Image (cartoon, rainbow over the protein chains, first blue to last red):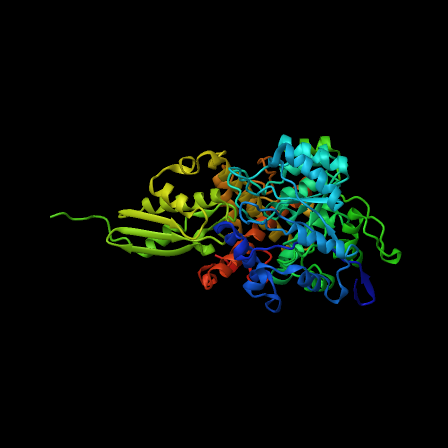
Length: 348
Length: 253
């Protein structure tokens, strides 16, 4: 819990990773390029005091993760969102066994989400059922830009993806996190395109779709889809650190999200180990929309409390002390709309 | 004796030609973004090296910029042999080979190139117009706090102050074949139609989210370029924006 000026904030970091990008795990040059690209994001968007040396950035391990994420008791709960990247790393990028063991050791502080990839075919469906049982999955993280043999990406609307989502339904996986964010090789198969989220959100209204990085290269497409689909949420991974380097841009992102989605469907994330949560939480609590941006309403304390933890706690049934809970807000002026009319509007 | 009528090509000529090449997604010349790493001119051979913010930048955008750059330089009078190369990209070898062989996008990327680049280019020309329109209208709104969002419906090109923001809007309208005379209404839906009084404010709001996306990506890419290539900031020209408090619109030429 974080406390400031007499207000208490229940904090859920909805996107963390325990990765291993050390040279011995790199399968090829792409493994190095991938972590180097992450490190550039880290160096470019962190305050100077928070920049790590490159060697430390390659791998943190469980002990350090617990220190970094839960330092000063600010973060109450954190959720693993692993990426496989089997074509880039021998033993994958996200370290399943280590992260799951850590989750078992700290069940009140950690939730382990796993991944699936529809290109694993029929066998993958059985594996997903087994994983759901073993890990007690409530959520999955999907990386549609991941490579797989000859394939350089997939879409949520692929027929096989639908079968995996049906298994999610069957085994009680309700939170589907999808990476729709900054650049990774997509070529013509535009992996940033959030249109596939629109379709599956309509067809699986009982599942919640969290668009990580809020579709940032295409924020406008994401906002429009999210206004129409009440089961679509915005994950703030990668958007958060702009609070330091580009506070006016951050104000616009958060202003747009609150305007289009309302305050109940936005989730805080540090994207650890890209960044650490402590400074992001502190900055966010202190943050306000600049006065000259009259197009946005000021951020209230209630909005900040919801974004920092209450919204994610609701999706994952994480217990929140009664005195810290808040009621849902009314619908936004912009929606949600009926899916039918929404799709007509999209056709423009 | 042979006399050459074409004047000696200079590095300035080459850079000026490269200044016509735009990053379609960020809607800025590659010269302003710092994407031109080096220009060499010797004995009629022009060699240009380009660089991008990450090794993972989308190959289709990379191809567009690199091939546009080559076309722009080849078109210069006096350009003999022209070598344009993209450095440090994970598809550098593929792109550079395809470009040198004049293989085209499909010839270079084969089965991975599902869609035509023309469509991609057209999509981003429309977005560039939408963002330019929003910049102009937000500037108009902020110039007088009594103006309301729904009032933007009746604003015409002639109502906008002269300056780079209005000029940028006119240019982007011309690219799309939209009217550019003073009486033309500024606010248009993405398909070029005119919104109604009822949808005017929403149309502006949607345009704003487009502009914020474009500007945000530009900040991101510019920052990453500087991180990847220390000193690259010096090659970048500040991005015009109504949200940059230190730079009044008038001074951003």
